[in-house]
Amino acid sequence: TKSLAWAVFEDKNGETFALINFHGAICFNTYKGFENYTAAELAKQVNEWRQGNARQLLEVRDRIRAQYGEIPVMMNGDCNFTSTSTQYKQITDSGMYDAEFTARLGTVTGFKTYFDYGTPIKTGPSIDHIFGVNGIDFVEHYIVRDKLVLTASDHCPVYVDFNPKKP
Image 1 (tube, rainbow, N blue to C red):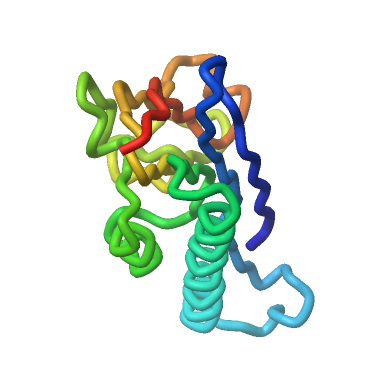
Image 2: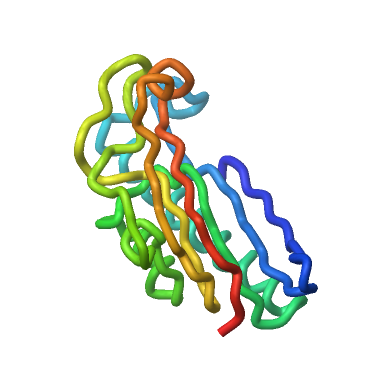
């Protein structure tokens, strides 16, 4: 994983929930040792790394739950994979669900969350996800697409309104 951080929070009622934030792997031929890789070789390498990312996320989730019990857990970040990828399936097959497709009151979907800096946002699959397990109640899911986003980053902010409830 390029980066991974996690925290366990306690709400005002003493209930705990965890959040794991990460940035998924990418691979370019500008990386030392990968200068002569073809596009196919780079794609194969990054696919392996992203499968490792998914395993790491699930291992951290399981360690948190081993220490704190069956608390609600969210995982979010710039995953660098879409909902049709092997890595997405690894995560959802483990019992995690994506807020983009499960928020109960509303969801913004169908937009690529990555774009070339300063260019218009296009329709397509997201690579930025927010997953939940153990009773996280996703209320609303949103992909910010206003003009300020185009000059602030190369990703659309993705956020959710949620309730960290126990099952």
